[in-house]
Amino acid sequence: MTPTIFAAATAAGRAAVAVVRVSGPRAREALVALAGAAPRPRVATLRVLRDSAGGEIDQALVLWFPGPASYTGEDSVEFHVHGGPAVLGGLMQALGARGLRLAEPGEFTRRAFENGKLDLAQAEGVADLIEAETDAQRRQALEQVGGALGQAQGRWRSALVEALAVFEAAVDFPDEEVPADVASQAQPILADLIGELEAALDDSRRGERVREGFRIALVGAPNAGKSTLLNALAGREAAIVTATPGTTRDVIEVPLVLGGYKVLLADTAGLRETADEIEAEGVRRARAWAEGADLRLWVVDGSGEGPLTTGTDLVRPGDLCILAKQDLPAGVAEGWARSAAQGWGLAVVALSARSASDIADLRESLAVIVTGALAGGESPTATRLRHREALGEALERLRRALAERSSPELAAEDVRLAGRALDRITGRIGAEDVLDRVFASFCIGK
Image (cartoon, helix red, strand yellow):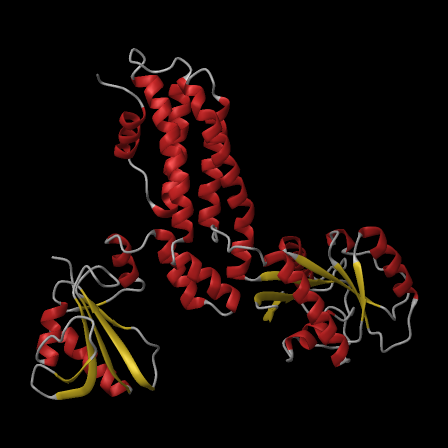
């Protein structure tokens, strides 16, 4: 028998109310044992909870959800008790004493998936919704929980089944009343599907960035003002600032919210040649982080003397050149940096990190860039690396199937493998669907 599990659904610590969930075949038994009787389904009812010795645990609201009309698809119970540690501990002990098992992490949602209440993408959306820190993350997670990826998968699934049915008809029923060029009928189906998957794959990185955070790297020479700028943008002393070059040895990440989106702002080691083993490792990490960032802020000490070219190979068109220390007299470096930035396609922002208005203007500019990169008419259907890998594999298979014009057997196998790749996202495709489409589309088996 499937074990009945229980767990606190609210965070640990003192609170006005704590919620304990129970799911499994013995959920009703546990409810009756503790509360005396099961209330009407889905109606919150006030009951006194008692342990096996008859001792009162608490007065609580109890809810009874008979399966399959529950989150997990199993018989489920919720106990809404006072949120003190003693009350919560007493209830958990009473449930354990009745032979119920403490749930493992994510086990309620796993059971919902196993019982067909959620697909895999929806289950991931539940986790994303719990972890959401910004409005954008919340909206994207809600779309995922609502089945946005599953609905897209449904369209892709239908197209796969239709194309596979055409190929199967050409391969398995060559002597029946099937048009000679039937396999070619799959070509436009595959072409349209490839276009949809390419669009979803292109958009998947946006979904990942909404989830994980838009990455902005501060790069530049030692003592350019990167750490001071990081602290000013973060509004706190996140990085150590000294006059000694090379103070920052590791990547320091600070989470921000700009334009309603999560951003990871990173201060990196000053880029220069060094014999110091520790600083050299910091420079290596700085380069690696900057190369993978979505945006780089090339910070230049505007009061400095002479050009500083170390690390300029990291900047890309669309990055920003930050001319820092504008509260000091301009040096030769400022004119050189302005000219270099223009040649590299970088916008130039001159500021002093000591100026609140300068920092506010920079935050607003960054918010515009982040919003432009992550906002869109609709939330991305794919939001994780796992989704992107499956889409990439399916695309490769479908392109091969489209190019295979002389052998419908090989094309059909590639379409099947594409289906398996997409199946890893939400788990929906089977042989019976293909057979149903074959016999519904052609006059076979007279």
